[in-house]
Image: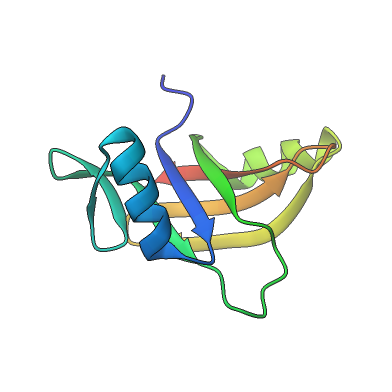
Length: 109
């Protein structure tokens, strides 16, 4: 199993971020998606001007049961920072570890 199935880049400057990684690493984009031969592997989320969160990379880890995984994260000292969200492609919960590092628990549809 791959440790991560997707990455989200939260940034205040989507166009600048796309340009930076495109020139630095040759990464391809399609709209707000990072792609490889047309297949998305990441996304770019623009932080609102009044959003006080720091720009960050947010990895998506695959789980078979997002609710159980979120409960286990809390049991282990982590926190749920975004409750379950259901999307057409699957369900996600954003958690932090006890040190505050965030990641997405993702259950594919």
